[in-house]
Length: 471
Image (tube, rainbow, N blue to C red; front, top):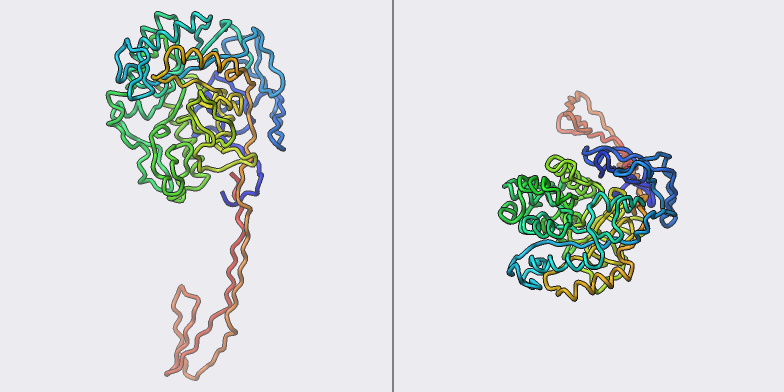
């Protein structure tokens, strides 16, 4: 983004929370795409990130469900009243896709599908270990240091994408085992299931189809909005956002410049000349539209403080890939970077969500990222149990305080070019009986008499003024 100096502080809209879902963030103004209410500043906090220190204005907010615990942003000390130090998180995608309901493991050609028996056995084992599922509201409250009503050993279940065979087929299992789950919805998939395709456009090239495969890939596969509303009414599910209209569709617009960059949120459309500012606005627009759709369709069952990152790609370069992880580091990314070597997307997510779910265990607690095990259909019961035991012991689900950040982007230094060009000295010859004709709007005057022509060209100075753009 030309025009701003290196290291200039850049603040972005932070209204990723619906009313009643307070989250400590850096004080900023404005709304995210004009959707939802602004987030107020938290109590006085000093957040140090490399050499940058930001002190937020003093404000106190109280978060439901308690009326006795006041949550303020902090990066130093948070009291965990009930002693809950970790909450394991498990992600599922599909159910019985390519295997029978009684297969254990499912082990189908699609690795993301588990069987009904596999899911049941895993939840039964967790219960036998003393675990009890919690909802997203409780999980967010825990991240803010509020453990009111938490079981001794809580865990969180996330169903990704809104795939209907899982949302429908898991209901009897959840009811039997007394569990609840959180649906990470892709609103573009629900739209597509309803036969509606209206992707988030790329300003630099509006002809790019940012919803490839819609609606054919979504119909009879993803849940429609009507079925989502019916699932919400059961009380088994809460909802968080995974992506808006285009955020989870596989993209191809950036491949010419950045091989293997298929992600809508992580890949700037470099070949079409998309600017950093256009890219950031596009990401924010897709998220804001998705939030608006969820609010309209499931209302209070939407919890705005959580975000599942599509493909677990935040564009971060640090971190070590654990053997049990599904994600990867470093990741494909072609958007702007900050002065600490982080992607803008990583920083923006930390400023807008209390829980940013990824699949790299080493990222847990960094910039509000929270590790989750992506449960695969090939996992035997023994493998699943081993992964849980190992990851809990390693601290991959441990509590970490909310960590809002100040975004300082690396941008080109402003270059001012002043060019002055003077043509040779004008020579004017006057001939008697001259006839003069002036042709507008040029700056050239032709004087003609008989067979003689005289031209006067004034010295020209062209100046390119320095331009400064503040993002």
